[in-house]
Length: 360
Picture 1 (cartoon, one colour):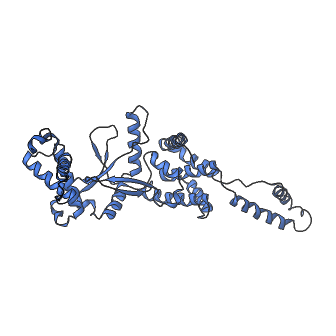
Picture 2: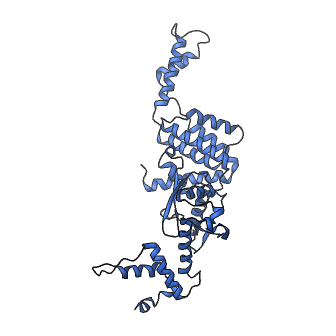
Picture 3: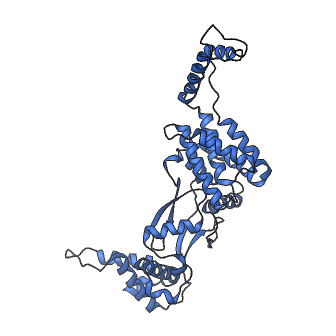
């Protein structure tokens, strides 16, 4: 298991190499050729196998060690293949497969190199071995990249970690991120390196029971990496991994090349367009999230409201959030605590200055 500095080193190394290939497409075929070479196991050479192989080269002129020379050569080659398959892969050998798995999600080899890559993966696919599982994952990501197109940015830290810290074979969607809602809750959604924002949102809608974006008007937003109070709406055709990668790069540039590993992109799912003709088909989840979103606009002064209406809305919101008020027979301060929570969570900030005097 690698420690934190070693993980950062390997992440930066992989990102640097792959960024070079994304920037200079003429290097992509060379990268695939080098990785195919490095992920091809070298057969262990023993004294017996070496003698048999050398002997086999002379069988055109005569048998070696008398009769049965050809049989000895065949049996030695079989033993050699079995030895290669049974040998445990080294750490460096698995690293080459990990880098190949990252490449297949970013760009594709051209011309005959595509055929070479497919044959290489097909040859090594085996669900019973560690290397074979990486080959199966590479085959899946290659097909996804062919279907959804090339990437625009290098892999993000999250994407690299999802491959180097565990074998991605065990997860059809190896990357997971939380998507936040306006009511303070979130939903974890998994995806792969070729998943578009549209595909991610479709998965999210299926999980939480909401309609398609064309009907609900909801959209996916990211926070601003430079720290500004702004959000960015994501287009459906953009790949979510490219969004996360560009967010990380902008954050790094805003901090003079330094990046906090604990700071990650925040994805928020909220309403962007409200269609009056679709109101009758609105689901309970959509109505609830829109209610919290409007209240958030009221709290931050983006929705003008006088004190009386703001106080009435805060009362309704705390009822939605916490349920009906329950009086405690022992006279405990549950009502006061509920009022404090309602003021702090649902009452506009500009009205909170004198709220204690008004409550008295």
